[in-house]
Length: 152
Image 1 (cartoon, rainbow, N blue to C red):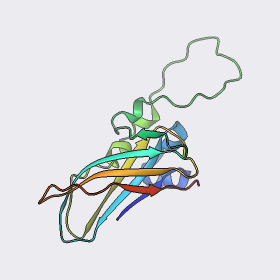
Image 2: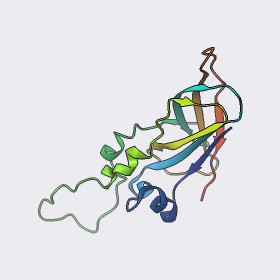
Image 3: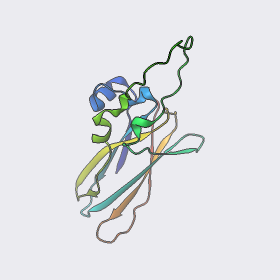
């Protein structure tokens, strides 16, 4: 079983990432949970895509690249008359990489979880497509999983 939950609210973000809310900086964190109810072990080479309602897709951003994503432009009343110093990215928080999906094996009767990150907003009717699970013994790849996401 595969489940996905977008973390867009301040409460969810605080519980997972502490002070930083990635969603406020143009990054949609999605918690992926994979449960194995069988007696077989699975190798995991997770690949996740965000599929918008218009069927356009976005690949997940590696957690090491998240701090370098450009935040959405926000209008300013007037340009500043002098250069401003560059701020350190709030997305450099250790929690971004610590909480990222990194499992490589899924033991029998166990579950694994972690975050994948997309540079987008949450769209009503969007889904996450998860693939990359293989039986450890035979190497047989499992089908992909389409997990619908809801708008908060």
